[in-house]
Length: 204
Image 1 (cartoon, rainbow, N blue to C red):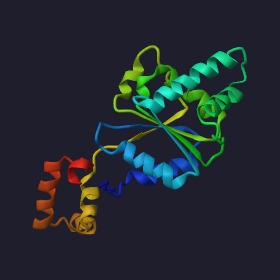
Image 2 (image 1 turned 30 degrees about the horizontal axis):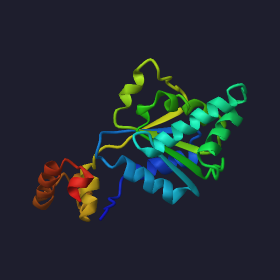
Image 3 (image 1 turned 60 degrees about the vertical axis):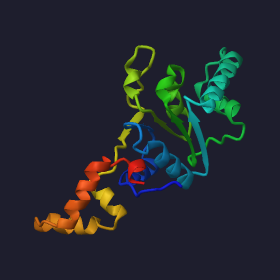
């Protein structure tokens, strides 16, 4: 059974979708729920959603599509047409629209794919989200850093207010904050929060 805990980062995702033309780069440690949150967000807020994980078969399929694309159109230089052709090779039903989103997970596993961020961002109407647990790896020289094309977002383990939200205690925490009061019950919740580390899977 999968649990979904309401996350404050959801409003940041909505703001990016509505107001930003940049691609979204999501960082965070493993097991904090990045992929789960992003998949849920994409499914609920876009008409078309394509998920690619560079550590799984979808990543291999995408790399195979890049190989076909490179061989077939390497002599052409219209980057906007090129990227659209690539996406059509990978998924023939791909539509370049603002209500289409591509989520690429574990992107640090492929410099070739990471280096597509700039042309995708600058030529397609579709939205792009990239994420990975060790994005520091992209500092290696084979990775081209697309400065100005990425909006960074960090997803961490649950904050204490988010944790309290699960038990319907967030309002009480706010009340105590404003009056600088102490609540023994909230203190017990804080001990439990420290024990779980705020990790969604542990809390579930």
